[in-house]
Image 1 (cartoon, one colour):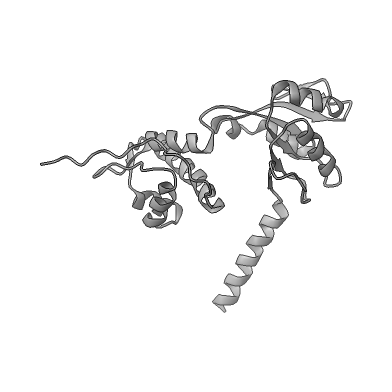
Image 2 (cartoon, one colour; image 1 turned 45 degrees about the vertical axis):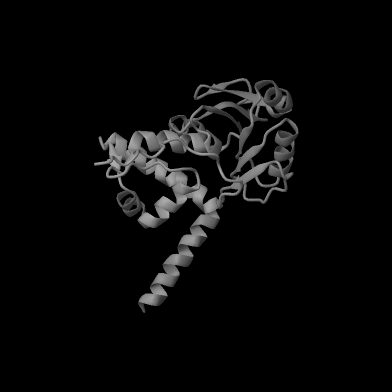
Length: 225
């Protein structure tokens, strides 16, 4: 009997364009695989992984096929190998240092959030203008004045930043970050940022997310009646 060859667990050369929903689902696959590993699972099939997340097995296989072939005939996916492969695809196989601008309630909450470290991110420096905060170390993170932002970002080579300032301040903060070399911004301010093509922005507006929920709940109630 000829044994079926193992499929290559290494990601292949990434295609030029991958749909954003596919990238979003990669993060969901990664979280579920990590939970499976924590529970002692060694392997998982595309059907099982899809079922846990509400996707079809075809969707799972199609998403992963953008980046290579990771399964083994008769086995499925080896969880630890697929975790490593997805982390390499997402770039989180190494630690990314992140700047945080704005230490209001939300900013402080993000400093306390331990999930960043687990997924390969570390807030390395924070910026604010409050005399009560500047010069302190909060949750192990040094707080520097906004005036020091350009020099601090350039010296540290940070490429990612989180903005948690009020909406009216966010555009100016984004401009300063971009001028200092930041290429990716996670924006919690409820405002749309205009940035150059080489800069990526992900906006997180909690009110919008709640509006999407109320729309779904309202529609569900209408359909039920």
